[in-house]
Image (tube, rainbow, N blue to C red):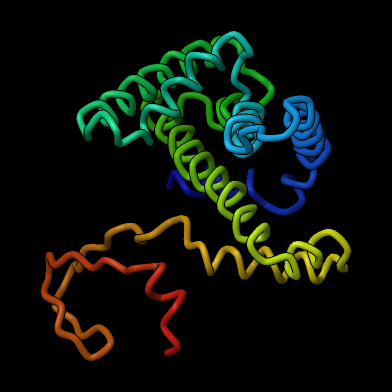
Length: 224
């Protein structure tokens, strides 16, 4: 039910409207990176700000809220302080999104949260909409930052592919990006699935209630 609400916002036609905004964000972050000179931190100045600013704009978050949201977003993916700290950041970020949704219910903003509220009204609860917003952030922030940073490392280590990105056709660029997605597998494990009934899965017996996990990095390297 919730997926049907958010899926139309991610069609190619609707996403195409975001391209000028994303290009502007990327250009500004590249300028900031260049201004730092030799030895600049790619993750700090480009890899993390690009997806963060894009998702904030996509969701329609107010500028004054973004600093607090960014601190919580970084903390939820930081394992250096233990799992409890990360889970605490997740909880705080969800509370932040609850407050954002409640505020936009009175005055819908220009982004995804506001549009869903205009379309669905009281048919969607604050909890469900905050959960959708949290899913967009969790799915797009760390993954994209990782792809930008790690993909750059891969290209720097292989000048031939770096040259293909710089000087090749759009088809060459698309092929390299697709291969980087496979090679890096920035999402390591698929969402867990639970069997509703006994079944045979690829020749293995799975009982009702069993959890099934797929290793995406393994699948991306398995010749079969």
